[in-house]
Image 1 (spheres, rainbow, N blue to C red):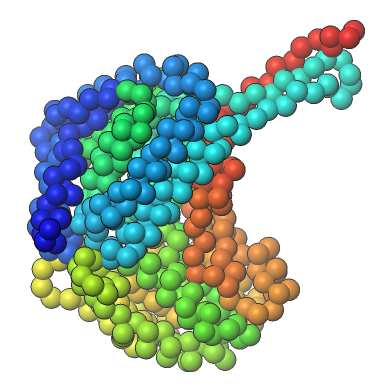
Image 2: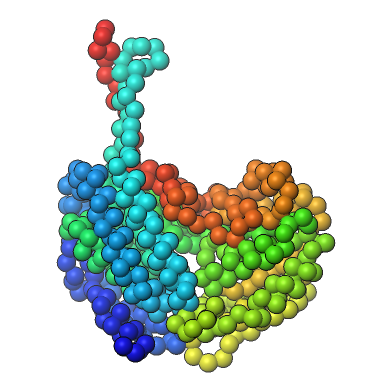
Length: 490
């Protein structure tokens, strides 16, 4: 089979309809064109659901909730494990599908299939570990029972940058806990979610437990569903401004909420760091997913004694990166997701240069079809530049200098965000101090990637609420109930 034929087969295998109550149905509001960001070409036309379609999806989730919540944990876990096994069998198809609709290099897409699959496997194991407590009150006056039960129907809103992993990171714990769901994937990258729900159906998931609405009317749909008394949980991954608006809507119904929002990750390199490790970590932390990740290193805060050498090495590595369509052999930097992202990267670079930063490589839009921007290194960046203040979401490194440990901490914490930070030092005590002093929900200490299904993913400050993954992740989809009974021996 030729490469073109393989791409066509993968796209043709994806349903272009809404998935409601276990059925594939047409949307009421026309269609959505899904484009390959490497070419700008339309690769598939799918249903554009209306707000009424979204209500029908919630109807289905509500109808399925009681039976799914009472389904034995072992059965729920085995369905998730079946889905994991099916995903491994089709990992090449899912990887290619993600590359086509999102643009990331195929090697990285394969990595996302592995990462996203782990949430299915991890929460298949966690389903049977939902426990409680049975104990005497401290005063000896009665018996306390503490149990956990599913929170109920959930609205899960996923982003475009990791279309598989962000769906499994929400659906894994929701299904393991016994919750039903309405999933609203990003309009730019909906195909992977549609393929995933088909896989879950094949794995044995009952009708109505997961429903998928693809729509361009995200705001109207969110407002309607979050105002519905039957919805009991919202989980969103995306920008902080949108998360704030969703929290305002959720407040009216006191909905249980999980928000994984923006980031402005510091990448701190101390004078005693192993520069080989630091450069390798920097390449991973910055250029994974073409820099389009909330965990991407945004501000490179480097000790003045090693900054020149760090900048030289990073520049050398970046100059050697191959840019192209993600399906091409050896490509490390694919397109940004759309032209607006390219324009934003260009704006940030140009403003930094106007304020005194120096481009050591890159800095320009790449002519031709697709949404490509040169991987870029800026040296001499200051904390007041937009490239240091805003979330870049593109392949741009901005290097600023510091002189003391206190300076590094001050610069690292000088942001309203607090998702993840990276620290490189060979001083164990300094590393321990940074764990305590840098205000983030996660940290990579001498590593450039922190994401793992077994770890609690989430941030502090305006980077969000709640945790996804780990033993903590399933509790975002559970309510705690306390019962007091008389002392049976009294």
